[in-house]
Amino acid sequence: MTIRLRAHHLLCMLTYVGKGYSPAFTANYDVIAGRLSAGEDILLVAGPDDICAPLLGDEDCHCHRPSVIERDVEATKALSSLLARTFGTGSRIVLDEKMLATMRSAFATGKTRQACRECEWSELCRQVADGGFAGAKIAIR
Image (tube, rainbow, N blue to C red):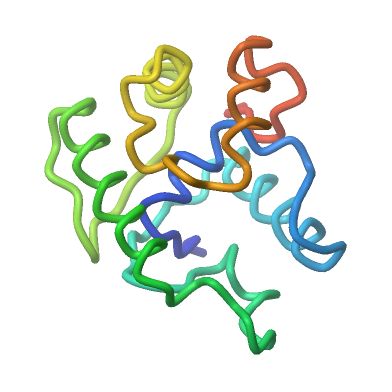
């Protein structure tokens, strides 16, 4: 199977430690983290993705807001530059141990965090990165 992710979730997944918007969101993300850790490929999508799924029934769902779409644009630019590969909607990514380490290193130094401005989770993500990503749920086996 393939995991559908929007671009800024490629950054969010680096520091995911099992906290989220709701128990349903966290349970869903835990399953996705397991699938990513097992090596499932990623399909980059525009708009809501597999991580967003539990939020889409909420009237106040933020998944379609311009600020979230801008996060996707910024994440795409940052990761394309970092990985020397052009990413966009429809791109397929196979996450491996080296790519995950490269992405985490760049995140830890702030090199790819442009998309994280004004995100409510940025402080938690900073703490996870500063702690060497201890407790992060995604680990390539």
